Image (cartoon, rainbow, N blue to C red):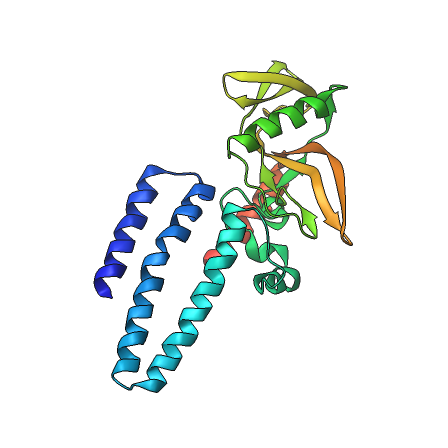
Length: 250
């Protein structure tokens, strides 16, 4: 058993070095999980043949649980579906969204506020939502954006960052927001008026909208973007922040 665990750990490290898309990485893990699951069957037969019925029963229960979650993974990662008997959906409905925002691209609004940020006012082009929808479909088809199964909520998880954007300064008080499907293919979709002396500093461009499910009815909200930028901090606010930091250090 130790040999199998070491082998799986080695495969895990190897796949990690390849920087594979999470979707296909999880598919690979689902297939690899057949190895330890099948080995448990061998253990169960050995325990029964040696008349260790208590341990055999416990291993059998564990085996059935593994088979249950393996089937869930097959539906989720290969068929993009959730089974009706999926117990994990109970936790999804009970626990807050912030519990599941554990990946780097998911930044909670609370964390954003702590960075002294504000939402930028963008004058979007008239057809920017059509451009955005087209770009998002391209990124989704290339598995560069993670989708979640359609349930109560949006298919694009909350606070997902748009991967390719650039803010170009056109004049002292005017910036142009560009997005694309790569950094070599950028399209201007709006302008930002900035009256501060300090240059505009973006924190993140977030995606909102898309397909969502509510009360068992599927809706589509047009995709949109929200840009967070660093606030212009006054000298008084800066001094207060430094004092608070010193108190925390003490």
